[in-house]
Image 1 (tube, rainbow, N blue to C red):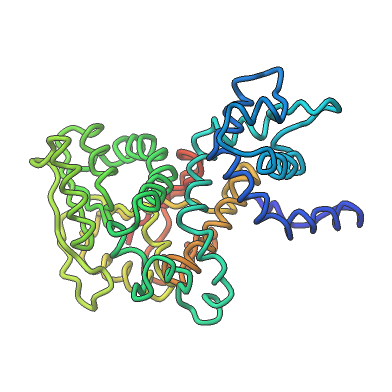
Image 2 (cartoon, rainbow, N blue to C red; image 1 turned 135 degrees about the vertical axis):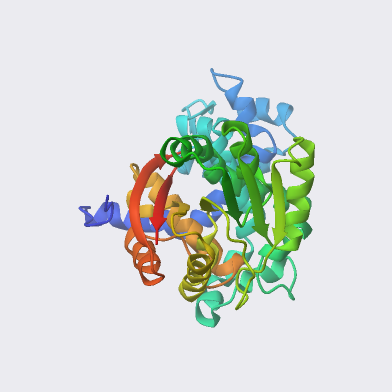
Length: 357
């Protein structure tokens, strides 16, 4: 495990400089979004020798004033560089902002899901509820039953973000499951839109998958499954996993949860795992796929995961988070499981915890 934050060796001058960047960070984010939204960074990307303010005015829909203030901030954020003659060029940072899929998905998620609601982070921490969620609907208690009711751009941003971190790990994780256990029956707990179930059926011959999820989620999953002609291999069971007796089925070789348990408070996780333990066969396995900050190879990945935990606080439910290794291990142990194996480095940032009774 890696601790990127054990100590910070930095001069006082660098420290106060970084403090200013934190304080003004929201302005840089919004300026960057506008530079992308109005095609300024794209125009610079397509002009390696650079463009003047007048040339950018001709190629975008922004005024000279708007371009001036945005590019000044962009230069401060090292997104663009500017010569003494006033020629702007795209930096490597700017290049990745518009060309790297992960970065684009993360930016849209922050903009359309988190940004406005993040103003209520402090209230969410104090009240232990997602106060920021009111930007979508003041009556929603958590985001999950209403994902299909999010506004268009927000809905797209949420699912792109969710799928980015889970789906990139699916192929390798399924390969491992097939090598180790050759499962015939898999329960996908919290199956979301059915992406994992579809991937399983494409990789494992004759496997049967049952998606266990809320009715609203099953509706979306059914549409996806039907579109992939997998109705004969994938079944559904509407389940509220937090019920005292959720009436779980019993036959699976693998109980799969991908970025599912991080949607719940620790007491809920214990309840869910205990119910699964009661329902599962003695020789079945529980497989938990999660991005774990202290199991990352790169600090930027840990940084993004820690930021993601704050999304749960102010937008999703007010009480859950991404786990550390210690937190997840303690929870599964309390629920009566032992960790047989942890496989790291799956997809962008995921680890697979394999449990047995």
